[in-house]
Each structure stands twice: as structure tokens, then as C-alpha cells.
Image (cartoon, rainbow, N blue to C red; front, side, top):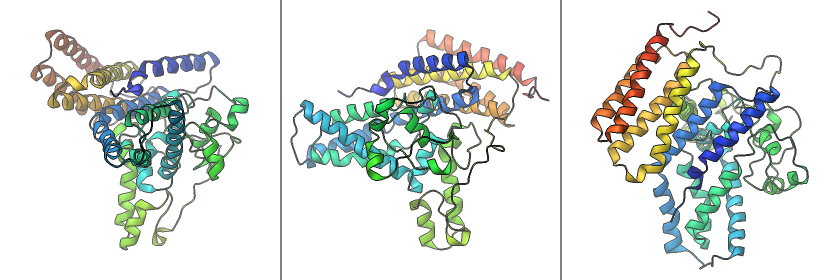
Length: 405
């Protein structure tokens, strides 16, 4: 039986985020911004929802190789578990390293690095499409003969381990810094400082970076994010913006070899006629600014409520999708993602947001009417939508002007 340990851990994630948030406020540390945190969590919700439509197929890819082409019949002993743990961590290192060195892979992985903050919500900021190729790196384990359920369990715990290291609250862990991937090591990995780029790719054990020459100790202050900031809270655009950059570069290249190399070379590579390789720029501390467009504070409450609706809807879908028919599953997944887009667009004060929001709310009413859900759920969901329409109408009358206007 497959157990989704990551989905089951979601309540724990939010408890730990709450603890870090309280620590942040108590010590006045400014580790969190509402717009950035909701953008991060929106990526996590979207990743889990889009993963529903692919995770079974990908698991059976590993399972098929194990059942038909494995070389060994391994027992489920403690030593096999330990060896598999090391194997999963080893191949994770190479998957992660290649995701930073091949543009087509970086186009997916970049999502995790877009936040200009560093807190536990960043751990949940995950690409919606990375899982479609990451499993390929682990296939040697299937050929060797490691059981698929054992693999799924340990790969899940490898992911879970990495949640807690996305924090600035823990400075150093003493001698463990020599063995494990720690918050200090991973802060380096998220830095856009030139000396920190493409360093510390480890999952659990930092020894791989030390063995293969990609280790960097945390020294100068870390500037988080990517070298060309996303400058958007839109969760869909976050997953496609780098692909857009690559396609534009490829179209500007008359040489077919250059067109292909755009996707295979490292980030920063450009054909010679476009200037050649561009190194990451040094960061000017005096001019450095985080993306933070202004908006009316009244929007905060509405956005938080809509985000909670998306979070609850996403959780219901995640834990009950096995019982849902295809049309309700796709419809409510789409509605949830539209709700996440609304949250980002309100923070950005997009001009198209007003019409978009009314269309989204109308679509919600249509779902309530057309899909055969229990009357109680229809009443609750319909009531929430009605309140949202009235609330949004009143917000609209302020024209969403910022407090500075």
C-alpha cells in the first residue's frame, strides 16, 4: 500500500510555520511577508494538485522496471533500508545538481528558488512539473532491485527532512554541519550571491557536496532569490516564465545547434551572437530591493480568506481524489488554482483582476449547482461564495488604491 507521507505531514508543516512565525514576530525579525508567504504556499498547493494527475503513472514507471528488469532480489532487512537511504540521497544530489546545470531542468526547478525571503513557507514552494522528470534519476535503484514501496517511503522522508532546513532561526548545528544538510548549508543554496550559486545540492547528507566539489560554507550575508527576479505573485506564471525566456532566446537563434543548446546548456548561457555566457551579477547592497508592490491593506483580509478556501479545497481534493469522478476532480482543481491566481493578482493590483474575480466566483456558483454534492456542502460553499461577492464588491469601490495614494 502506498502512503502519501508528504500529504499526511501537511498539518505538521503548518504547525511548524506557526511556531516560526510566532518566533519571528516576538523577535521582530521580518522573516515573513504576507504576499510572499501566500505565493510560496500557493505553489505548494498547486504542486500537490497537479501531482495527482501524474504521481500514479510515475510510480508505475519505477514499479515496472523493478518487476520486469531488476537484477537482484533484495530482502527488506535493516541493511537494505540503510543502503537504499544512501542510494536515494546520492541520486537526489545528482538530480538536484543537474537541475541547476541544464536549462530545461532549471526551468522547472527555478520555482523553488524564486522567493526573496527564507522561511519555512519556502520549503513548500515547489514546481508543478519537476516531478515529471525527477523520478528518472532514481531508476538505477529499480534496476538493482530496491522495492518500490521502500523507495517511495525513503524518497518521501528525504523530501520531508528538507522542510525544516528552510529557516533563518537556526544559525549553526555544531559538528552536525560536517555530516548533514543544515539550515546554514541550505541558506547558501538559496543565495543569488555569485559565490553561492550552484552550491550545496545535498538532500540529507552534505557529504556529497564535499566529495564532488560543490560545497560552500555560509560566510557573507545571503541575498535570496534568483538573479533575474520573478517580480510576480502569479503561481501559474512562476512555473512558465523561464520557459518563456528560453523560447524567446531560441527564436532569436538562426542556428539549430544554438536553438537546442539553449535548453541543454547551463543557466546564463547564450549563443555568441547574443553576447555569450552571462555571469551572475554582483549584488549592490545599497540598491538591492525586494519585489513588494503596494496595495490597500483592506485587501489582506479578503486574500487570506480566499487563500484559506483554496487551502481547504485543495486538502479535500488531496485526501479524497480517489473517490472523485474525473469531471468534479478537474473542475474543483481548476477552481482552486483560479483562487490562488486571484490572491496573487490582488497583491499585484492587476487591472484585469476585477473581471477575473467575478468570473471566478460565478464559476464557483456554477460548480455548486451542476455537481452532485450533498446539500449541506452546497449550502456552505454557496454561502461562502455569496459573502465573497459582497465583500469583493465593497473592496472594488475603493478601486484597490494603495495607502500611499
